[in-house]
Image 1: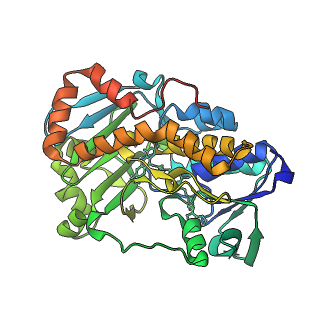
Image 2: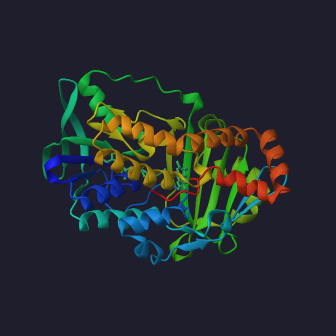
Image 3: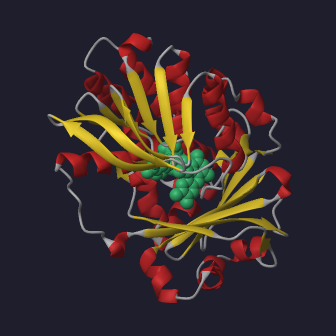
Length: 388
Ligand SMILES: Cc1cc2nc3c(=O)[nH]c(=O)nc-3n(C[C@H](O)[C@H](O)[C@H](O)COP(=O)(O)OP(=O)(O)OC[C@H]3O[C@@H](n4cnc5c(N)ncnc54)[C@H](O)[C@@H]3O)c2cc1C
């Protein structure tokens, strides 16, 4: 790939947008990245970086920066169902300990690297509209503090996460938007804050299941404990009140969560986002607009592998864009080969997690069979083949 192959515009500077930008610019491509926020900024996430990400970090030239940013190495994950046995997954199941590091730090490291390899990064840039000619996306209008800028490109990437802002702008401009009414009753609300005073052993990640949701805690840099949990929207509406009410009336129904978190206090305002669900989306719209990361597939957070899929999907897309064949066909086939099984296993686990009796049964079975628990956890991860 080289600059003659045309300009790439990436919308979104999270792990997928920034890592794709690094890969493409390092291969000689002309890349501009627009990001709505200004970094560093907090981001709602469990902040559990699975160790399979490290190979990608090394390829991207950020491994040392990630490992020396003060995060905590996580050597075991404990799953606490509402009742039943605790399931323990040791770090060895994935080769080496995971990393607890804030998204504020991680995302900034990746975006700084993108700038260093020559990506034009425009922060504080709101995507205003898209220009479409003959059904093809040609340019976007971006609003910044300095005014509106029109950016034309040959290839466009939507890396804006679950919101798929670029796809939606394209569909509005093309008149092909297929907006479905929001299915409010099926949605989720996720919450996150960094806490002080939590009761959590060093090197441990705990996942607590409670009625209509689950959450996780692990340490990040500076000794804070990140608490991130998600709840069905209906349950949040039913209990009413603020996050303290949700904690008291839902999360703390799990006694292990109460033990770990009662008496802790947030050191930042709680963040909250709502979203509709999980699963696969369209990977491409013709040969000019592609989705990546959460915009392409949103995997269940308790598997702790959303960021891994974000990084892996950019490796797959970079390979497809370098191919001499039809990029969208190559991307679809590489993507399916790599992720289909994992997405399926995660959907089965999610269904079990949200059914209290099934979760209790599964935990009773796995709690007594540690190797089965490790084997199941590995099915949510890439097979032994190298990252790329
Ligand atoms: C509750 C919860 C907990 C999770 N916990 C974990 C975990 O512990 N470990 C893990 O690996 N994964 C976890 N995930 C998943 C992980 O957060 C995502 O998979 C990952 O962030 C996807 O990266 P991305 O770059 O595709 O999207 P994002 O991280 O969402 O990045 C998208 C970027 O696009 C920008 N953007 C949005 N709209 C626009 C616009 N209009 N114009 C320009 N820029 C825009 C945003 O500001 C953002 O920076 C969790 C997810 C949830 C919901």
